Image (cartoon, rainbow, N blue to C red):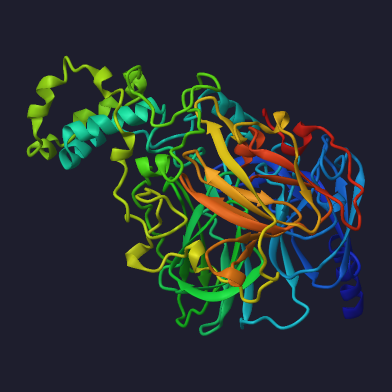
Length: 603
């Protein structure tokens, strides 16, 4: 009887796990319950997120993907080094998987670590088409752990992805719930002086922007492993165990700041590659990044895994506990982040960004304010004044107001906006603009992880000089919700052509107000943190507003590849390029295909 039951159980598992090295996935319509709302979405093997795909370094995998949708689909194996025709980007590496079709991916596993997979068709990924990948190394890990959990994050919005994109195109701040109020104006005036505050608001109005433009998408529910905060995914442990937590950010748009109150975290991997251990209290995980950390809870109690959005507008949470049903306190959201003029000006002067939507020639350099539409403040919530504590203004020098009524604003035409930036030395982190409003600070003054802390455990490549440098300016028009590279959207751009065997240095210059996670398919990005051969190896690199970041790439993968911002709606709006690697052992390349199939949306 026991043998029969065992055989039956194995038969039930076979459709999911397949034979050794062979795996089966179906792409399905699914129902997603966040605890706050229920919506229709897309998943794998009947659920979202899909299953944890577990591979072994050195094996050859065969993955049969059956499309049960009534539309074309695809799967991209994010961060996996493989032949370009197995990369899963319609229009670049293959045509896609038609409705009712089964496509078989075949590729060798040449690495270990934590990765993920997702659709690269339209908005299927933010609609739920994602899952995780765990690859066991061929040898021993350089760190010890007793228990292992995937912690996969996403942001689920009640609106469909197509509707989100339409709303952003009509009104870029449609989902911005952190508009500044008159109360905040008077509070700033009391602290900084009336004229300084007026000048500050005018400068932001000139740019047709708000300090609260930190996140494009608010009003989401954060999920961990498919569970909302009310549903509380829980991982069980025994006191004293070392627990490996594999954090994956599968969000459409949300950066999360991760902390576990009461527990120190040791970062041991970034984007699947081992790093020299770093002890931190908190870290920021960009969209599409992964971080592996080790924690060691010694007490028989519950601990909250708290993932707070970078803009402080939402969160995901889960629990580590010694038994199911236990909970720990959930921290409150901290004060909303605010951009500063340093974020806007930074190192580049923002000269390439078109804020006004007035045509390609209307770019903001130092800018003039003589023709500024002061009506940009029209959306301010004046109702906030009725409850405002005006005593905060008692020490304000109101004599400055006497000249405002007839003030000639044209005299501000030659104003040096740079004088409004925070003083130099305000930020010590080289990956943030000096005086940035986005510089992360750990709760209770603890250690917050920086890219500068990441050092490779073992160099993957020999150190050598790059053969050339390619500058990629990250550009956009927030008002029209157009995102681009070097002021050119994907459908209007020529491919970037690389030569097999060269080493290219990419210079990312972020001329926008948003943080962009830039993802190169098929090849590693060596992030320059000033550590020489110990620079960390990543597949996704976040570029903060007003900063310049350098990465180097060994061009060792022939074929055609995607290169894009991993914020779903920025990618769809045009911040995307095709890379063509010419030469190499297999120089045949796929057809160019249709741009819209590769990125989806209303580009």
